[in-house]
Image (tube, rainbow, N blue to C red):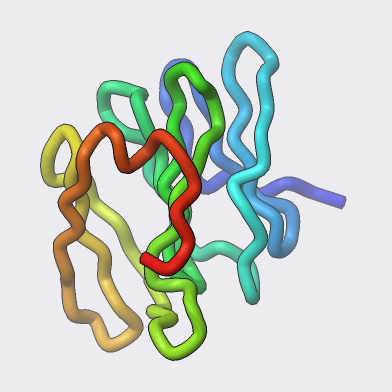
Length: 121
């Protein structure tokens, strides 16, 4: 099976193998970023390498600093699923995401939001 790269920075690579996304650090640490219905469509790594985001069926936002790999999900709960086709970083803890209709939406979060899994966002 082949991994497909979604994003790369100096210290991290976000990739997926079919519906499972993961991030690998330059020092060899690796963690799952979650499973998606359908392959993940897009990812980005924060310019300061503090967090990364993977999207498609909703969005997973994951910590790259210690503790490595803790994630929080957005727009993935039944009745609230969003299909995300593009991402762009707009601030230290902010991004915009594009939905399947081409509309852009903002997501501003706190550093603490990337500190643990919080379903239902």
